[in-house]
Image 1 (cartoon, rainbow, N blue to C red):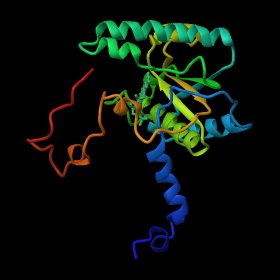
Image 2 (image 1 turned 180 degrees about the vertical axis):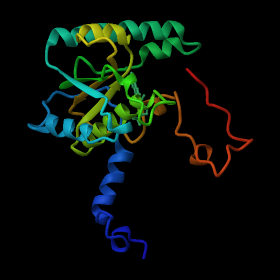
Image 3 (image 1 turned 90 degrees about the vertical axis):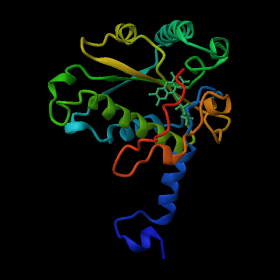
Image 4 (image 1 turned 135 degrees about the vertical axis):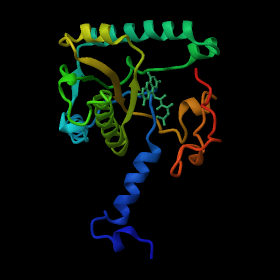
Length: 229
Ligand SMILES: Cc1cc2nc3c(=O)[nH]c(=O)nc-3n(C[C@H](O)[C@H](O)[C@H](O)COP(=O)(O)O)c2cc1C
C-alpha cells in the first residue's frame, strides 16, 4: 500500500494531500483579470497565510501594504511602465515581442498588495550572517504561501517586479532600509491556464527535472544555463 495517510499518522488525509499538490501545480502567474471583488474575508485569510511562512531566525521580515488609494495605484502603474520600457531598451533580443507582452494587471485587478522587506534586516545575523539574501528568501516564502492560498480559493495573483525599488519605496513612505520586492495583483480570473504564459509564448520551458536535481556532486556534464533574456 502506498497510501501516505494510511502509513503515516502525521500525514494529511489523501484528499488533503491531493489538494496541496493541486494548488502547487495549478498555480499560475496572472496578468489578465475579470471584473469582480474578492470574497469577503479572503484578504485576511491571505494575510494570515503569508504571515505563517517560515523565516530565517524567525525574523518575519515581510511587510504587506494594502493599496486602496487609486492615486497610488496610478503611480505604481506609471513606475511599472517606465521600468518595462527600460527593460525593453536593454534586452539583447526579442525587444518588439517583449513590448507586446503583458507583464502586469495593476489597473484591472481587484486588490493590490505591496510586499517589502522591513528596515533593519541587516541587524539580524541568526541564520543569515553569510547569506544576507535569506531575508529576501523568507519574504518570498510568505508570498508563495499567499499565492497558493489564493489559487486554492480560486483567485488569481500576479507578482510584478518591474519597478525601481527606491521610487516605489518613496511612493509608500517607507523608512530608510525598507525595500519593496513585489507588487501583488489579486483578482478574479476567467480561468487558470495549464501552462505558464511565458511557456505558451515561447520565452521558456519547464526544465527537465533531471537537469535540476543532482546526486552528491554537481555533474560535470550538467546542462548549460538556459538562454537569458
Ligand atoms: C520573483 C518573481 C518576480 C516576477 N515578476 C514578474 C513580473 O514583473 N511580471 C510578470 O508578468 N510576471 C512576473 N513573474 C511571474 C513569472 O513570469 C512566472 O512565475 C513564470 O513565467 C512561470 O509561470 P507561472 O507562475 O504561471 O508558473 C514573477 C515571478 C517571480 C517568482
